[in-house]
Image 1: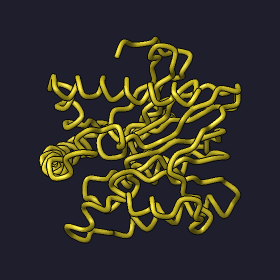
Image 2: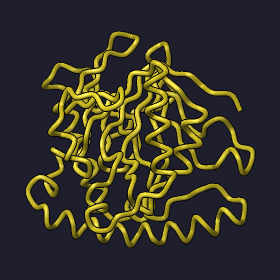
Image 3: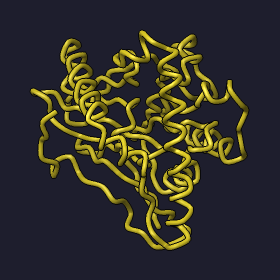
Length: 268
């Protein structure tokens, strides 16, 4: 399988340090995808879980080393911290091994359109105003992820692609669906205030590309539930990629995803 090269690659919510992180899937994805610029859009490291109990296997080091290697070879790597790796917000403008830290950034696509890139947690009322409640929600989320791990193991033995129970369950809860819609609206408004044509964010683990009243809303998804990334092609169009099977274990198409121009606008 050849490596695909893009103008820009956006990844978020890997949660290294969490047992739920699909690190093997991400390593496989990074092996076959490269870009001139890579944006790490927050929650790459899960500082919350690492504070509770230390979990850092070799494959977490492998992800860090692979990103550092890409930076050494000339890829611009920009790390925009999220709430789970907020300790890095104390170091804006700092370079760590060639990886640049920034609170947020305006990205100009190849077609001249401008996209505000941020993690998005500052627009999550729960995280911003009720940290204890956020931690409790994080615990409940862990329980759903544990079910994910068991199901994933069974499906892999049966030769079936990865499927996220927690992502499916979240979308069955009306409150969660309403929250997603409100989050998208508020983040799109922030892009509009800054004169951007669109916004690229993470945080809520819900990958999507859609138009919202003239603003292109793009969410990178995550590598805990959906195993998704956003790529920008050389012509400025974007593609949402889902990496649901391991290329080393069974044949798969290069990506199960869709190109921006083929995606119909959806209502929030």
